[in-house]
Amino acid sequence: MAAPDTKARIMAAALEEFAEHGVSGARVDRIARNAKANKESIYRYYGLKEELLDQVLGEYLRTNGDNVSPEANALDEYVAGLFRHYQHDPRYLRLCLWEGMERVGLRENPALAERRAHFAEKLEAVRSSQADGTVDPGLDPRHLTIVLLGMVNYWFAVPQIVELLFGREPDAEILAEHERFLAECARRIVAPREPLTN
Image (cartoon, rainbow, N blue to C red; front, side, top):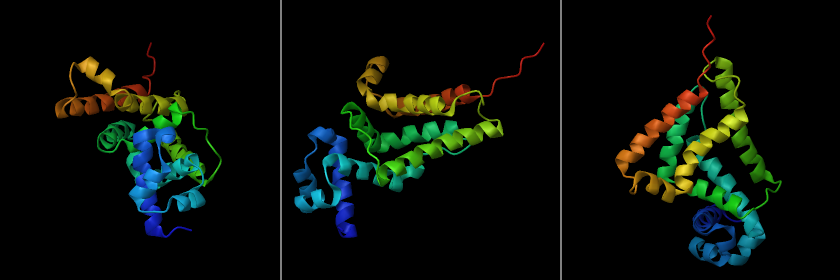
């Protein structure tokens, strides 16, 4: 197996390469050059580019998962925090967007199991919040999680639409305003329904 420092360099170089160019546009020779590694060894240790992408996604979640996971009873803070995170490091979202656009199929492997576990934790945080009464128990946790993620991700997936809507490239003031707005929207979406009174 590759030495730990070599593996770390390959993971870092592959993360940048896939985030910038997607799977089709990524070049293993460029990854090898930027990682100061042997191209053949990348194929030997990681297989095809799609398999390397799986490893990169898994590694990102192992390293940064706490920054992109909700805690029970704090879904509004999660949405705001995720928005802040992607302002500074949108690479994971870009990887997921490329994966979706290029229709890269999900393959059963340890990296996919890690990703499943990551999203299972998100669902569990929603269910815990529902059990505690801070989130409407009538909302399907899967649909709700997709809605909350979508509220954040759209901003970064289509920045040209954001610029058209605001009439200019968003500055720090707009970003801060939108972060607050996301948190408020999340609070309103998840709020338990008031009981009907006669």
